[in-house]
Structures are given as C-alpha cells and as structure tokens.
Length: 113
Length: 114
Image (cartoon, each protein chain N blue to C red):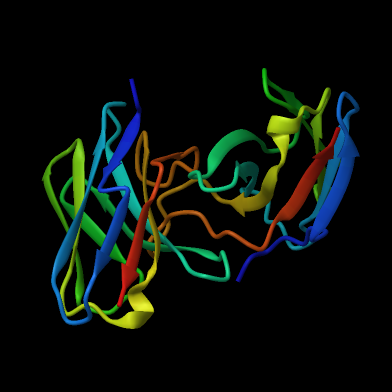
C-alpha cells in the first residue's frame, strides 16, 4: 500500500483557472506538508499542517490554500493559476510537528498554459 | 538557505561503495544530520539521520566527524538504482518557528556507472 498518495499525477490547465491537488497518507502521522519543486529542481516548503494548525511559508502567495478535512488528508487549492505556478508539487507527512523524518508522495506535475 | 555544502556531482562504479561527503560547519548542538535522495521523477526518500554517533540501517551508513562539521553517507554496494540526487540536510528536529519542513539544497547528483 502506498504510504503517501497524491492525485492527480499530471495536471495541465489554463492560466486563471482554479485547481486542487489531493494528498492522503495512511501512516497515521499527525503532520503533513506541501513542497514545491520548480524547474531548477529546488525543493521548497510551502506549508506544514498539524492538528489544525497551519504554518505558512511567508513567500507563498495567498492564492494557495491548504485544506485538511481530516488528519489523513491535506489538499492544496490554487486560485487564479499563473504561468509561474508550473512545477512539481510534493505532499509529505511526518509523525509529528518538527519531525524531519518525512515520507513523500510521488508528486503532481502541474503545467499552466 | 541550505546550511550544507555538497559536491554537485559524483560518479561511482556499480558494486563499489559510494561515499558522499557533506560539510555543515555551522551546525548547532541540537541539529541532526539528515540524508534524503530523489530518484528521477520520484518524491524524495528518507535514507538515514544522526546526531553525533555513526548510524547504519538497511540502506546506508552515516559517518559524522567528531566535531560534527562534516559527514559522509556511504552506500556500501551501489547499484544502478542508486543513481539519484542525494541531499544532506541539517535540522533541529523540533517544533521551532516557521513552516517547519526540510530545507533542501542543491544536493549531489550521484551517477552509478555499469
């Protein structure tokens, strides 16, 4: 069974659209994350979410909003998509906040046209 | 910014030990050394971590110098599937401020040659 799964794997959309990426973990972890990997392959933390506490990286535009219906899910909503949002988005989870042994999903490749 | 320095790329022959160095001269006393790798088109994968002592698991060994300013990840018998970007990360492993999460640098692109 996949520990951290993401859907969709690929997402191609037009500029200005709103889209969502879903993430689920079956590890029983308390903390989940979203990372962005840009075209230069740099991986950067966007959000961490633990027990309804959201920590936002200050550089993330407010067009991005994570939503967690329960502990096992952390979805990423993106409004008014821009060309620069094209990237690979990775979800991850860890046992608790601050635990750096993290388990990553396979990634969602977003292309904004 | 990443607090580690790694060579951008390395080659290793299949079946030999791959030794990946990492400098972290500004590491704090409560910071751990973590190693992750990212195989092409996949998500990062946790390998190993340590604080002071050397560590070994089924994937690799981690050797940390006594002054903790550098470390080496050892893949004892490299295979072609070990070709990946390897990231060395230092982190306090606590719930300090900010977005938590891992700060990835550029890593080392390890290429295993047949």
